[in-house]
Amino acid sequence: DLYRGRTRRNPKHTVVRLRTKAKKFRAGLLALKEWMKQARSQRLPALLDTLRHKLQGCWNYFAVPGNSRMTPRYNRHAARLLYKWLNRRSQRRSVGWREFLAKLPAWKLPAPRIRPVEPQMQLRPQANHA
Image (cartoon, rainbow, N blue to C red):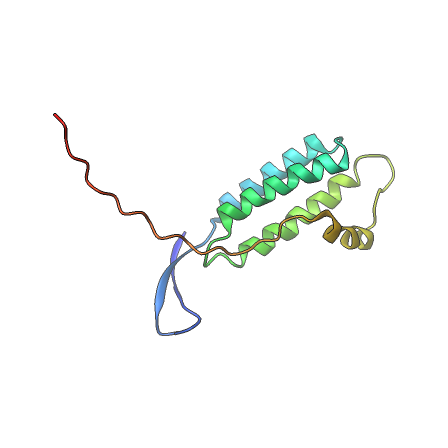
């Protein structure tokens, strides 16, 4: 969604910002959930490597100015999904929540960073060669 937001430097100045639609957000989480459900039997290094790539792709898509509330939310949900599916790899609970939070920085999952929007390239009219 597009909306008009104020800048930090000058609150009187407004800019157009982007925000993720709730439907698209839920669809992204559902796709991540389904992938984790299928991939939970992989070895942990392979699972984490693929998850890093998937999260980086999410940040490339979702982490735009004006969407700073949704990206940390997606990150929290992704961490909870990882915890859930790691603990369903066997009949026993593999890792407790505190232990999981302690291991999370060592796994080096990419953090969401709001990236600046690049200016659009100007399109030049093409000459007709007829």
